[in-house]
Image (cartoon, rainbow, N blue to C red; front, side, top):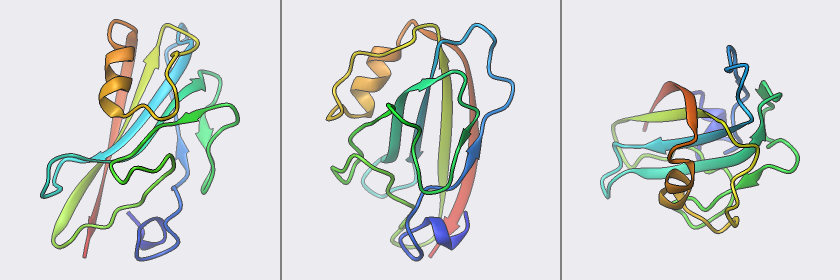
Length: 133
């Protein structure tokens, strides 16, 4: 992951392009987390209610009317990689859902999001990026 998208740079989200989204998808969910964090998996970003017609998240932005959930830092926005030491893996997980909207408030965390998605996932993909300090 380029330093620009981390706490050592601008700490803005990278651009992400989604290809081959299932034709029957109604919405998308994106979760970015770090399973290598010393205190357990650290959630850096959650987005839900992304229209299935969106195939690109621009750098330093989130699509309109999309909900950004609570991260491990307690904020409702992207928080870039900032590992204490060593190389960490950052998983960008994209889920295609069969429902147009999840009725979750923005203060919801990853666990609540995963529970709300249960039974609605019709496709998924992941991208893994690395960052070291």
